Length: 308
Image 1 (cartoon, rainbow, N blue to C red):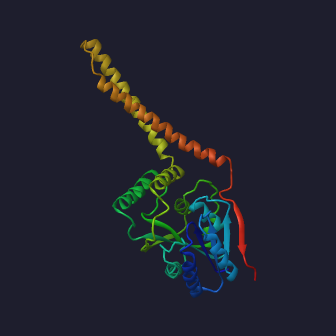
Image 2: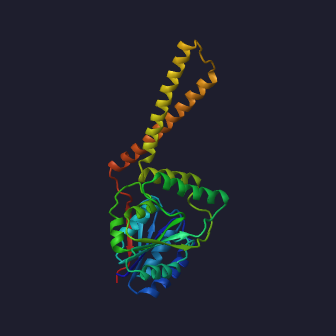
Image 3: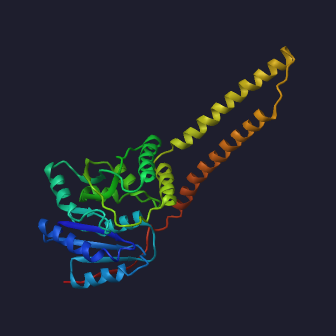
């Protein structure tokens, strides 16, 4: 098979028909040997039913029904694992990323034989001022802490060669961040700027974004642990010098510093650092706990595909 197209469904009912029509048209410009894989990530609306209807009238459509909502990135990896194409195009179904981008990505990938991946980069972030600023800070923070680097405003949309995809699927961690794994896999990748549309309220609220930031940093770097160790070491040395200073003033100058304010500030500072350190260690331990249980990322309840 030449081309596989993968997309996930979550509250996508109003977009499915238009998405299918437009992406099919773009795929046919490239090849007649293609497939479209819809992954229903426990969508609460009738997204699954609409996708099944498309499957029944078009043998090129395959639908994977997950047993519940597992999360966007896990659903993506599940869909990718069922592809057969030599080239795999990943795109969201909410039409914020135009299906017509397939042609642009295809031409970009084939301009240079050594290229393995073309991924999308937003020209500018959508949303209000706070969302834009927090987005920029997120990438700066991640690149500072992480052992790998990702481009600012990178998106999940991408066109991949099969060799790269097979190596991407070798990553078996259960708590995953997709764009991080894509960067970690390596190969020759290049970004393509595009303008992302806005179709309504995002499923990624502030709480989810913060959790994703924490997951990304702790999944791809141990630098927070090194910072905790270095901070603790620094405080220890400063404390030793301060104790020496106090003892010196007591026995040489017969002077004792008074003042509960300085004492309480010191206690609060050290207590805060200790609690933060324990919290960071707890995050890493929780990730180990989740990984060693070796549970499946997702559970595929049903596969819908019309045979020829």
